[in-house]
Figure 1 (cartoon, chains in turn yellow, red):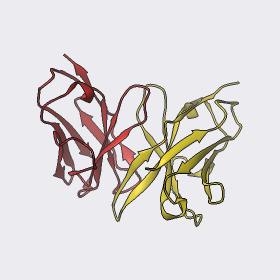
Figure 2 (spheres, rainbow over the protein chains, first blue to last red):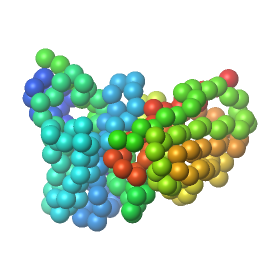
Figure 3 (cartoon, each protein chain N blue to C red):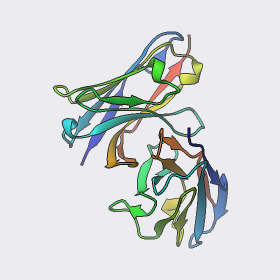
Figure 4 (tube, chains in turn cyan, brown):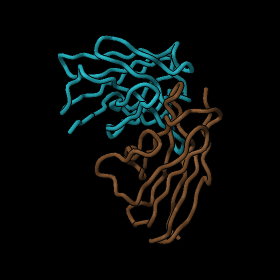
Length: 120
Length: 106
């Protein structure tokens, strides 16, 4: 059973870069796409992007200019960098495994999430 | 982007009730609609993909239907553990989620 565990600083200053990692176990990290999804306090879910071990990625156009995702297969980690953060980036950040094919794509396993507050 | 709406935004029901949640897409998304359940303070749990295919381990009281722009999630007999917020998600284009439907106890 796949297990995902997010980690990173819980507090980031405005204009700085938010950096999170997701440790993957129970599934071959090379075989899947991995995703980051966030949820602002009291609000709904927002997809940030997907990344594959080859480096192939696709990002939400609304965040694309600020997002970088990568996979470190040796460490079994998926990483998220979000630059130039503002208070609007305050959220719980989840990593998830991506399954599916064609236009049917879904997130079948999720980490517990890590809260990030953007504040000076 | 494809916009997703859900109705109602919240509902109250008794244990044993049949509950139906509607999800609507702003354009045709074929069958590329998925459902998740989220309890307070927890990560979302994947329930259904491709409109109607239940994830392994999800109780059969959950079912999904629809196509094109209109979709429904039905819980045939609400159980105490089903009180949660439910989100739909489309994967036809840039992935987007609905705003959620909170199912509460009456």
